[in-house]
Amino acid sequence: MLVFILEDDPVRMEKFIRELSCDEIHHVETVDAGKELLLKNKYDLLLLDHDLGGEQMVDSWKQNTGYQLAKFIPKTQNKDTPCITHTCNPAGADNILSVLPHAIKVPFPSLNIAAIGEFVEQHKQGM
Image (tube, rainbow, N blue to C red):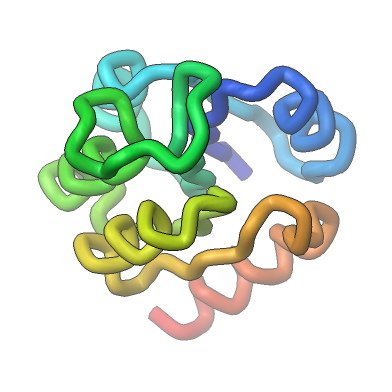
């Protein structure tokens, strides 16, 4: 399983790396870096944070947010890829879901990283 993660917090990334059962993780901390990878690769799962750059409760209209990357995803080969937004910013998560209706939101503290593989398999069976 090839997983794309947009996340700027090193503690969260350490937890993803430790608990996520997958073949490979592509990790980015900025929207621009994410766009490059999303154009080059087809992923099995997208994990999107919203608030980047060490900021919290960021307005979605700022350029470096998960929402700005989410708006770009439908233009890529990953438009139907299972997606989880794990941000703790409820407005940011809702904005991401507004452009990626197949995505789900699970705030990071509630995210069962070990069960993510099951989510991907269920999504594949539903397609």
